[in-house]
Each structure stands twice: as C-alpha cells, then as structure tokens.
Image 1 (cartoon, rainbow, N blue to C red):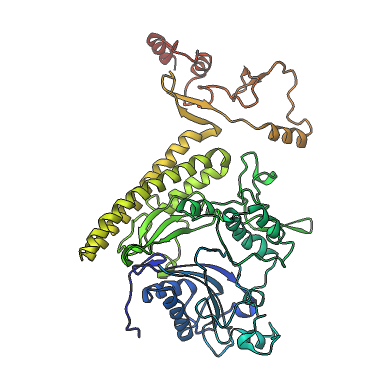
Image 2: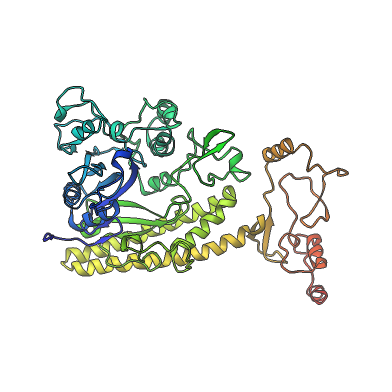
Length: 545
C-alpha cells in the first residue's frame, strides 16, 4: 500500500513538471520473456511513476522499487526522464523468466547541460563509470547477471568497477536492423544539429548503413546553437532528408518522391533480402509529443506537452499544460491502459486520430505537392499557439503568485481543452480544403474574376526525369504516332495543342463537374480574360444542359 504524495498526470507528464518518454529496444531473447508473476509493463510503469514522483532521480528510484516488488513485464526499454533541473536517460532489461529476483537490471546516465541525447529502439549506453553517482547509476547485478547467463566474461575480475562492461553490447548488441532502422534515426537528429554535419556524416554514415558496427555514435552531442521548439519539430519530421538514408528519389518513391513504403521493413526477392528505411516520420505512429519543461515557471506551469496523433511529420500538435485536469474530447478516451483494445476499425470523425490520418494518407499519394502545404499549416498553427500560450502563462502566473493556485490550474486546463477542440475543428476543415485543392490529380486555386469557377486549375504533369524513366523502361509501349508540332489530347481524348512539358488542359474538361460536353468544350475554348460569356449567352448555354 502506497501512502506517499501523488501527482496529477496528463499523458506523459505530471503537475510537478516531470516528463517520461520511452522507446523499446527489446534486447537479447533470454531476457525478453518476463516472470509469470510480473505485472508492471513499461507503459504502466511510466504512469504509476509519474503519479508518485516529482523529480527525475525520484522517478528512477520509484521505477526500481515498483519493479523489484511487482515485477517487470516488458522487453528492454530506454526511458527519457526529465524534470526542471536534470535530464536522465535510463536503459533497462528484465532479469529473465527463471531469475528468483524480480525487476530489471539498469544503467542511467545524466545528460550533461548543453548537450542533446537521442535514442530510437536500440540500447545505446555502452561503458560507464561506477564511481560517479551524480551522473551515472546502475543496478548492483548489472555485470553478474550477464556473467551468469554466459553473456560476458569480466576482464578485470572486479565486477563493481569493470569499466570494460558495455550495457548495449551485452544486453542489446547492434545488428544491421539496429543500426539501420534505429540508430539511423539518432543519426538524423544529431546530423541536423551538430556544428559540422559533414564531419559527423563521414564518421558515422557507414555505421547507420549497417556496414560498420565499430564506429558507434556518441551518446550525447553538443548542438551548434540553442534549440527551439521549431528545431525539434523539424527533427521529429525527418524522413532522412540530406542524409545517406534519404530514400525519396529512388524508384520506390514514385513520381511524387514519397518517403514511405508498405511494410514489412525487410523483404525478399530471388533469395536475397532487402530493406525499406524506417525514418522518424512514419505512417504507423499512434501518437507523439514534444515536451517543454520550463525551470523559471512554478511546478504546475512548468511542463507543456505539445501533443499530436499519427505521423510525426504531418500531425499538428497542441499545447497541454501538465497540471490540466481534463483533456479535449477529440484526444481523450479509453485504451489499452484501461484494459480496452484500441478501436482501430471504428471510424469516428469526432476523434483527432482519424481526421489526422485522413490528411496524412491523402498526402502520401502526392507527397511532393501536398506535404509543403501541410507543413506550412502546421507551422502557422504552432506559431499561433505559442503566441496564445504566452498570454495564458502571464494570466496563470498572476493567479498562482496571488495564491490562487486552483484558479491557475483551472485556467490552463480550460486553455488546453479549448486548444485541442479548436485544432480538431481546424484540421477537419483543412482536410476538406486539401481535398478540394488537390483532387483528381490537379491543383486548384482561387482566381478572382475567372468566369467558370473563380479558380485556376493546373496539373503538374510529370517531370522530365520521370518521363525519361517511363520511356526507357517501357520500350515504346506508350509512344504515340502521327503527332507533331506539340499536338496532344485532353483528359477525354480530344485533340489539343500543348507544347509545354508541364502544362495541362484548362478549366472545364479537367473538373468535369457534371457539365455537358458542349459546356466543357465551350469553357475550354473561352478566352481567359474579362471577355467572358455575356449573361444572355450563359442563360442559353444553361438551357442546353
């Protein structure tokens, strides 16, 4: 029975300004199956710890105590544990099904001030000092467990101070998959923020390609500048652009340079195995967040979760104060943490998950054209929320400093709920705008004074490189004979004159809004100026429909 203080928790943060995130690395098979009486999985461990801890160091000890008593029922995990003063990185793996001792072995490293740490489904902490508890912590059996399982042979004979012992190399050795699919994402982050990206690339590109496992990346890197929310948002949107794993230009990306592929990650062709990439921005993401912890604010106002659902590169995020006692209904609900299966086949337009999936999945088909529009919309939404949040901070801080703490919490709760509700409404409307703008392979924009629809319609067509590829790979299959001087046909096979590689037929035939053929041809031939059809002629045409 727990008799200590408890804290309000929303998502992965609490009212004390503590935030915990994670990635699963799995680890060696001997230790991935828990004891039958272990009951705390990694997700429950996070939320119970947040309920009982106010600082990162408290959280580490709470996680140890809980799993020692109730057992650890998950695979290997890397935890990011953050408070207003420190950032800790903790890697754990269970002691195994047959071990009489419950819980996990662990190593924890404090991230130095001014540095950035990243992990992505691969254990990364290797060797570490044993006499620096201000910066490194570990379980007392971290070496002896490995020795008992035949995973490690101590070099020094002194397990307590064996500095050759490497947590990652023993409990989660790097494989091709670990380097390429997991460490590649760390490379993407580090490469984008270090002062010398070329040097970083030259040192570690072969490692993340899965060719050289000896050149492991540093645990922490120092960024070239202080990072902003925009910087982290960009890093979380990466598809390996400008890195050796960029996959937006090969045949799998298609004519719209789509940085996505169908699963599985590894596939077989004629007895050889090949892979797709696994970037940070990926289609199977359920939810994501960026946490901002502000040491200058009082605890209830310190932690902000910028929360989103679906793909990290397409989802907009909204700010949630970690002291909030309610959340937007568009983002709330019960799930696996409550013992309920996720309703993945129950389409519900009232939930942000579905609307944000509609936007991202629409973009996947024509990425090069649609994604810039999505990204700009996300940027403007985030910018607006930052401005509004500054005003809310001032208001809530005044309430807090006057001793009206409950009123401050109520204010930030209302702000967070309204922000989520508003974003859901805005993103649903945005989906409709995208659909109208990019339907049927066209790009349709408003055009004042245009007679037929008040819009300008164009088709990007195909690039010269893509045309060359089609011609080269199809051996004349699509060659048209009897055409010269730029003559072509429109979408319905009618002859037109078109000598522009990227031009498309104009309004009418392209939209096919249920008009008659006569009207469509008339509109295509109508002059694109103020000399539009007279009112009397429009009435005559309408009578023909």
